Image 1: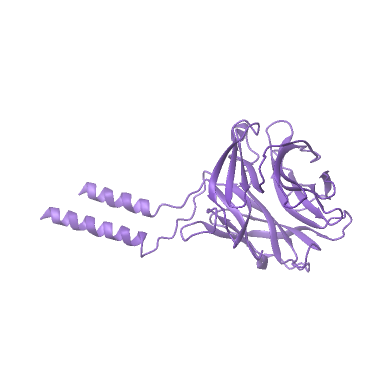
Image 2: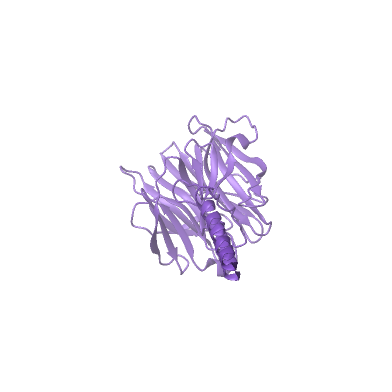
Length: 341
């Protein structure tokens, strides 16, 4: 009888086990009205994690006419014990306006959006000649200062350059500083910065020298933690790709043991490719993570699952997994009762 009961417990634990993943993906709906956290590379299925983090309707009224979320950055702040979110939102009439919003949640998988507020907004042309902000990356130094790098597309010259801001609280930001200029018909996109334990931070970017069709190649370089200036760039991929995120395993701004290697995710035309480095970006190995094809979502980032996190269990359809568990229980009970005869 004891064996039968153990069998029942084991089966129930198996069918009700929560969905876990090494990484979760930040995705924006095709119409730009919602930002989600998902565990699947492609469109989510019935048992996948799919959490709405932010919708346009949750943004405070500001009179700026924002209608479309275009990018976001999300990570856990271990010093505060919360998840912090920054989202770039623009109006739906072109590149005339962009806003950056801040919010936070005490939990990732039991998402509870708090304190949504606008950090800053820009119009075109503004005093800096900027047109469209996108590709935002934010990190927090060990001293508690927030640093931001992001791409700005400028109609003048048809180029995208990297800019930098600083903040004491992640909400009120300094005026922007140009830290990586681009020539005419040149783009530096999708910056992601990793806080190294010593020396300059490491920055990853996608580069495009505009032609038809436009190839994107990934570069790495140094980002000065004080000025944000980018230098010592070198190309690390030789195939066309589009980077969606780079981060150290573990804490994004943590101890040296968390920076033993950096994972980089590349969204190609049809597949999601992971590049791994075990020597802090000196050499790379490649792994195909599977088909990435979606007309419903655009992937804009990657967040690693934190060890203490407990994802919401996957729904158990009564017609499949739940029904199987019930049959196992009934069969076991029948066997036990039959054995008592």
